Amino acid sequence: MELPIKDRITAGRALARAMEHYRDRQDLLVLALPRGGVPVAFELAQALDAPMDLMLVRKLGSPGQRELAMGAIASGGVRVLNEELVSYLGVSEETIEKVAASEQEELERRERAYRGDRPWPEIAGKCVILVDDGVATGATMRVAIKALRKQNPKELVVAVPVAPPDTVATLRREADAVVCLAMPEPFTAIGLWYANFSQVSDEEVTTQLARAWNT
Image 1 (cartoon, helix red, strand yellow):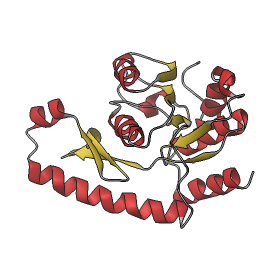
Image 2 (cartoon, helix red, strand yellow):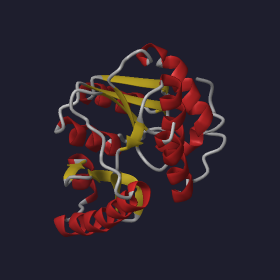
Image 3 (cartoon, one colour):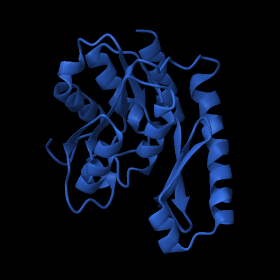
Image 4 (cartoon, helix red, strand yellow):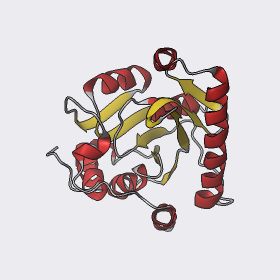
């Protein structure tokens, strides 16, 4: 994968080429981590002729460094903490709970805004491909994996355009497979590896979901 990546659409199409061998499977389900993972997942799902939906996860940002994930939460009350980072930063349990409560509100808002009353897809027995526009610490993806494991998928595959090597190694221990197109070092931040990393709006998410659900 040539860096920097032009945009998320380019990233999704590149992932689709790398994952062409999944196309003939009848048990596929592509789940996007919103918001940035949605345009990537849409391109992948279209190319693989697979249904697409969302995996709602919220990062727990560290105090004073919101982009530094000390953990994450997902629908169903699942939480993963980076205990080493929490200990290093000296974050109190009270602070963790306060951050988690705020992110839970946003998670529930996004559920209503993006999905409305649409029933959640069946996970059991499926080959689930979890997609984001990249991972840094991997906290968000790890909580998504943990939440999905409780629903008995046949296989869990992580698909991302770019990630640091150590995070990919961690994810390979927790997912059944990891597809990552580029693993630059030093990594620093996902946005550094995109030419266009503009924020994805709620409207773009709902528009692409509607397109996916109507095809």
